[in-house]
Length: 252
Image (cartoon, rainbow, N blue to C red; front, side, top):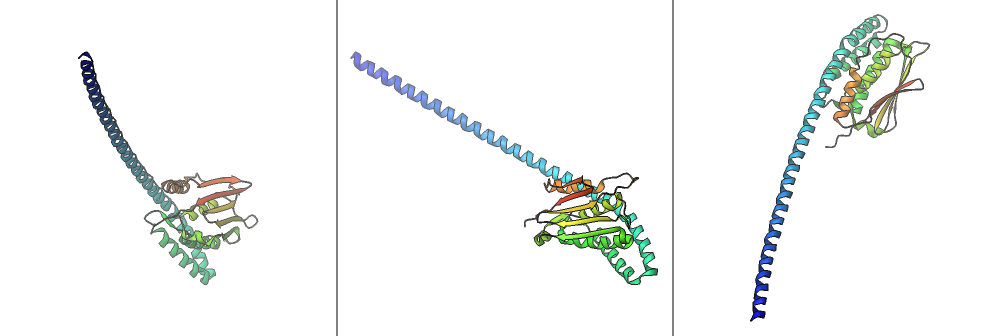
């Protein structure tokens, strides 16, 4: 009888221990699952907030770029138009055919200037056509004082994108900050590679220059930041100023 009572008692305790253990395991599992779900929800909220901040940051960068573009265009238009009209006036009396071509290119340049793209980037081939017209006007004005060359290493690059007015910014800076004479002409080269454009010019810095606003370079930095491109850079080395403009690929 004692043995049977001990066995019954052991069974009772075993059942109780099993039940308690099962309840504890279920409770632990519930608490673990609850903690995981809560952590997942909190992680989701953090990700949403992070994405929201990224979107807001992109908006700020884009708005900043638009403001800088407007400042850049306001800076370009008045003095460029004034100088171009002066050159045109001189050409009308000396070379009517060049004057006609000059007028046609000037009108196309201004059509390009007054119709900016929505995303502040354009196909490289469009920017190339624009800068060719711009170079024609500058060479007409300065004759043998400016040398330009354009070299295309990779034709596929023409279908990629570049910031609107990128070429004009760099070429205009070269003309603005360097001397150019028939004895020491200013030489500028545009080299188009597969993933970037390298624009270089000889360094012949003016002794006195007007203060630089850096609207152009700041505008380019903003555009490249918006498109997460970090390869944009400028440098001076061995008597040459070099600007690297990375190309932007847009995937549909």
